[in-house]
Image 1 (cartoon, rainbow, N blue to C red):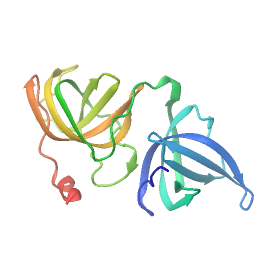
Image 2: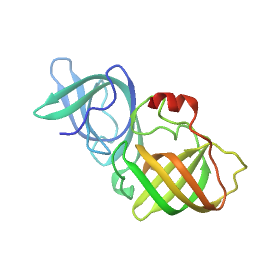
Image 3: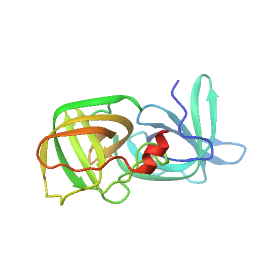
Image 4: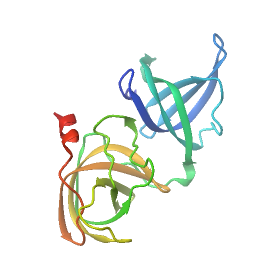
Amino acid sequence: MGNFLGSIGGSIAVYAVVTYVGNNAENNLHVHTMRDITGNVLVWESDDIVEKSNGKHYFLVEGKVADHVIVEGEHRTIVTHCDCEQVGEVHKIFGDYYGNIGEEVQLPNATASFRRTEGTEWKITGEYSLVTPESEYRMIVEKGDYTFILPFDSIKRIKPKETGKYNIYAKVIGYTLEGDKRATFLYPTNVECKNGPFYGTLPPFWWMMGRM
């Protein structure tokens, strides 16, 4: 059940909920069992118990992958050196995530808005790697219960609350949060501007190299 996250020795950032806290009698450490936003299991041992570790709060968990193990058919990613930042209460976060990593997405005649990326918002669930894009702007599309985010570098000056219509072709590369909504992070393969402002450049060289 579930999948392993990241590669052993690599760094990951994962949005997760702490589902159980037990104790390791051998080393007297607290054992946190967590599930990420797609149901994969992480296990982390620490001296301290994560505040509000009651299954009702989302955390951005950043750490190192120590091992991958299978217990009773369940895939578990063992993580160490974690930093857990509370990002919201589960019942106050709305919407659904869309698709699986690598899945192609088409959003015809989509209404999109743009805003600047703030702080470390480029972090998405999964392994830190060259294919995790940093960008100056985010393109935000809402379709029913789904929110999609695409990274863009500006080729013109952005205006507040600027919107337009687009045909979007992209791939799912991760999941994140957009305010109080679950959001699916896409990487654009082609964006056709029907009307409104256009942002973006060709994928950077390092991103293309990471896909080869």
